[in-house]
Amino acid sequence: MLKDTGERVIPEKMKVLNGLLIEHIARYHFATEYVYGRVLDFASGSGYGSHIMAKMCKNRVQEVIGVDIDQETVKYARGTYYHPLTKFRIGNVVDPRLPDELGQFDCIVSFETIEHIREEEQFMTNIYTMLKPGGTLMLSTPFGEGRGIPSGQEYHVHQLTVDEFKGLFKEYQSTEYYYQKGALIQPAFAAEEREFPLGIAICKK
Image 1 (cartoon, rainbow, N blue to C red):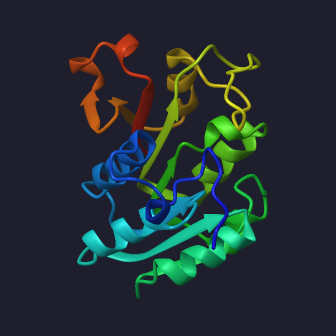
Image 2 (cartoon, one colour):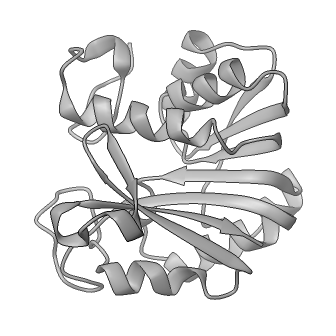
């Protein structure tokens, strides 16, 4: 059985009222309004999110590729969340060889990943390279004190400020911002950012 950590979401081992579970599930259900074609779930974890997108969007998704660095996690995803449209594979999101190995995607989803990564520039470069022109990126992260400042979270390198988060997407043609608190996701223009601990960007290349 996959070992639980304070950061890993494993729905089968969590209570239905667990706040972490609720917010993660909400993001993937939110993503189903946007995904189509060939989809990459970048840092897919235990696989539940890839499964949600494949199952709910089966009529407009060609395939969903879930990539995670941990071998046991990928093994668990393959055994627990099988779907004919879904494939799980081992990979490092900052490996510069990954774009050549995986090709390009119509949609890339990466939720709660970037705060774990020191090689932020390579991570964002990989995403941009793997996203087709006109494709859609959906990326989320918790807000915090900024780059280089310890967040107090054991598994987070740091947590970006709102402005740093928005600065990640300058190369994209357009970006819409949303804020999240628990299951509630609201567009930035309708929300007070200080009341929302998480941000979601939907970008068009």
